[in-house]
Image 1: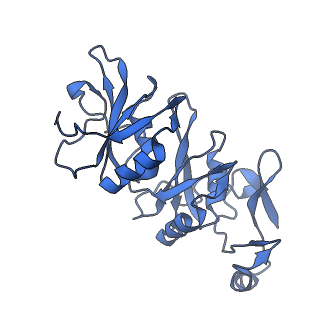
Image 2 (image 1 turned 45 degrees about the vertical axis):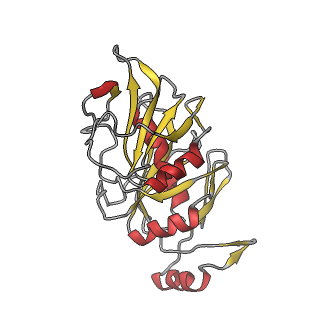
Image 3 (image 1 turned 90 degrees about the horizontal axis):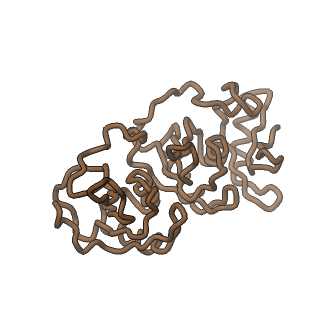
Length: 266
């Protein structure tokens, strides 16, 4: 039996137990799942990552035979409000409470620092539903995390293919103008001059699926400290106003409201 630990030796709240036979392991799942241990209900499932090489006693490696496959039809979740010190391994170990994890990623800024959010790819869609249900607002490194389905899986988060034109003095997102539901677009003020459209989009994705995010630039390419975020659903935009207005992003408290000029430049 092994209890997984943080770098400081504290328990991560999960572990692995190895039995002599497969029959004994199955019996443990049937009899001990959702039973109480020291005042907490425990979750017991088969550990399909054993023997995968890598750090942490041979159990915490990278992909465990499932390579890069990302497009598994609803097998990915977006996780927000991560502590900046949370590593991909910490995130993976925490999210394994809901099912077998193929991959965990921490989204990073250009200088390699964490953006405070990431993605986790499960082997089965049912594990995604369980993660959203059971790990939403669970605490990781002292912060309650936000978990929702990641509908952008397979979209390549490195910025490739997402650039677009810089029409109307908007910095790099472009994307189709098209018609969109009223109330979907937000005006975001008091942005740090270091904030990119990708960082703005990643921050707002904790409230719903974002169609596009733009940071306004002047003629010389200098950012003006405000921009827009467009959701696919008006309800997500309203949710973002409630949750993110006044919340800090890169050292500045954002001002978030509906964009009354939405569509004027399109």
